[in-house]
Length: 586
Image (cartoon, rainbow, N blue to C red; front, side):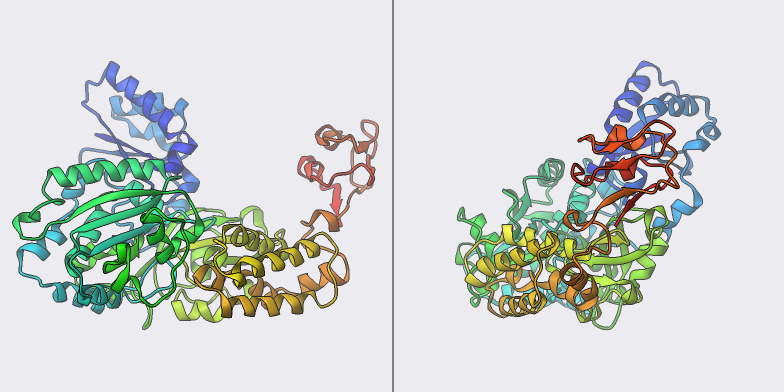
């Protein structure tokens, strides 16, 4: 019997470490059945963490969810006694199992299944067979690129550019040294796909990068990863050491004449370094600021040598494509968007976590069939796709399919895969302001349009959410949006207006309510709302008064209370505390 604990960042944050320590102590004291204890990465069901998988000797899986340290003794007792029925109260429900049942996993194929710190486990699940196939069966650089081309693999980091085209350009470029780079600088709020892949299956990234390096003729590969991912860095570092020791990295890989090393560069977390030329500047020890293009990195990248950059998810697909053939990957998806795509579901969603679905799946299927819909029976309002560079897609567009062109038509973008769900209580004006505040602060300042344009837009939105909007503000925002899109140097600036433009496009009525009526329809903007107590509902339980930090609520016990508007700071504590719906927001 094996007991496997999910120890991705989400699992550890929920308490998986304590569960592991307790089980380790129990098994070290007495383990007559020879039960093995292991770890794995995030399987994607973050809403159920900590997750413990119990495998019987015949391979039967019992998935235990929301496991706490106090449950470790019961798991141990059940394992020792052989009566796993004792764990029924911890078992995942059939409804919760639908989260994975409706997915198709390629990039995440081994995440949450293998031990990310064991190269032997990766090898046992078919690891490094693809690079071995490439190097021992006579596949040429063009043969490999051809399979990537047949697969129709487009970059999963945001722009969706053809991977095969980039690889050919780098291969054909003249240079005595070439570099292959992985962009793991995942900076979108609400995005954690790349982190999960590195934490859960680091060798798949290494193998994909090796195949890419062979295809373009690179002898050095680099993973540029944000320093805020310490667990991912630790596991990737161990994977590099283990792969080198087994002959999958270094000199004469698999006995061939192909040699390649791989190293990690930890970035400081600047959002702009997600742009490939800014990333290269940072790699060279300079301030991360985008370069003018052309020349493109394929001609003059890292140290002005031919270089190729793709993100983690892109490389994580490569070994699968080589093993199964490009046609198998292309069989999934739509005409212009092949394969699968990983999304990080977060926000007001019932089941948050990682989702991988074939291109062509609708937003409705992801949010409602897999994600379980909106928490607390609230109404779906919008979903933010593509992070700060994307846009808000409203309920009327829920049947839009996941496809690069279809999503672009809505005003959003595929992006790296962030999918932040919003309900009826979300103010779309405030949300647009939130994302613009992020991009304004993350602007590198190199070009005027982005540096000053985003700041001017933010000032207007600040006024609007503060109840000081003016007639003509919407038109000013639109003018600024298009000026920034047309004049900004890099993708950060060119896409920064997207959240504002989609808010104007789909939620103009909310903007107008803020400006013309000094009212926030969602009841979120503090300066535009007021709190009161419905005396016909209030029973005088005093819960609201006890939670008010400024003493703005008065009233006798078992008598209706009231709020002093002069003292109220609009923190919302009273509404949260009231169990009877007596606190009203207007």
